[in-house]
Amino acid sequence: MGGELYNTRKALVRGSGAVAQSAGAILGDAEAAMQKDIEVGDYMLAMSAVPKPRPGDQETEAWVEGYAVRVQVTRVDGQPVHGSTLADDSGEMTGDHGPFETVAQAMAHGEAWGRHYVARVLGHGV
Image 1 (cartoon, helix red, strand yellow):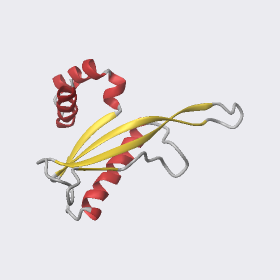
Image 2: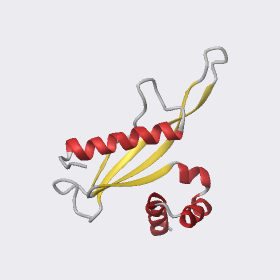
Image 3: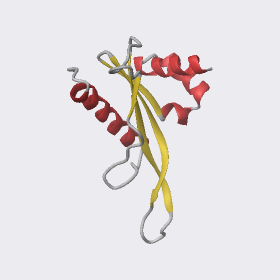
């Protein structure tokens, strides 16, 4: 299933409707929305939204679901990202005021971070 999961996630980015529907069946629609792979030049950004509780409104003091994002950067050709390191991991990232309110916000932040990392830190123009 691990190979199928990777291939399904990779196909989701490439935009085939039939594959996206089968990905929903394999992963479950909620899980499929919380994972996304994007190819940036010679690199692959594998993003995952992670549920993270955040404070709700001050009146009820209840915690509501928020999201952090984790990005793993690998090379498409399987070569090391730098030195002998095959992948770099961002760790869990949240916004300035704690976890993101939506998966979309978390993913947008992860994509921006990944593109910046490839362009500026690894030194490859995108």
